[in-house]
Image (cartoon, rainbow, N blue to C red; front, top):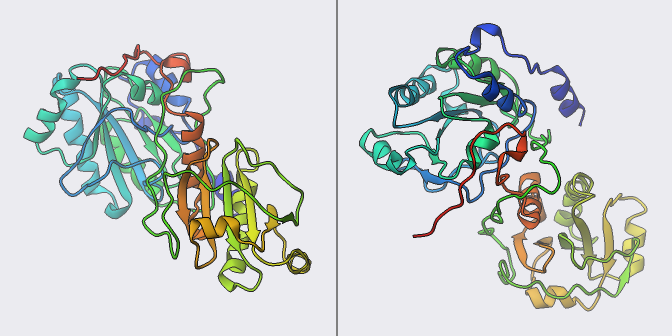
Length: 370
């Protein structure tokens, strides 16, 4: 926690004047500037991705943590829009740590129908998201003229509206900063009541251990025999249920991690540890081991038996309507995973219009099927 605090204190959010692209419209710069210090909103299902041959899945902001990320807007319908992606791409070959930088291209809505053909014909090698509605561009402060934002290794927006020729210098400065995986970066806030696009729940875990795979299915009814902690009603809430025991070393080792998750999401997620032992056994165990989340016992193992759990620790994450969204070893529960489930559960995708900062200039068009 100390390292996370120090990291947040020592970074500078100012951009040297020499790096600033004075050709960027001030309205757009103000829109982009609202992102500085925050993580952008995940794209979710917005936009159409054009991926290089070696990439199987579209990247997310969470996937890119640990790397410096350049997000460059462009358009295939103007000479400047086409030239900028070539210039931005050269940055990837000029930086000090080539393995720790990524370039994401955002094609603006105008003439977006031609983007895929252009990328294929010109062998564009960076992941490109084609914004067909304007929602992505509004969330990033992009309008018609090519511009950019740059994220540091923590996933925060640090610079906006840079000259293309300054991208290398700016990226190198951020590459010199350490990456703190424990530092939690807040996503840019959106006012309450704003209509937002839906975002998907995370992909299912590929490793569910010694149990049935019930991801995407209804969770078994929550039932326990007795509570060790204060009782909590899990119905209608996002919940993490971990099955554990005091005699299980891996279970005990995961407790500090579960404490951290429970603390981080205390206002959004209910975390419950369920043991099949007798209550007094767990009470005695807690005299020397702190558990900052709800704890219950069920010697009948009713939920465990329905899930077919043969090895512990084992955890499930359930959305508020009762569907299992993730399942596996509790140490696989990351902050990013929980946040995506919370956001998907709340429908916290991109704002449908320019309500993010009141000055996004694209009038969002609905997707048209067929």
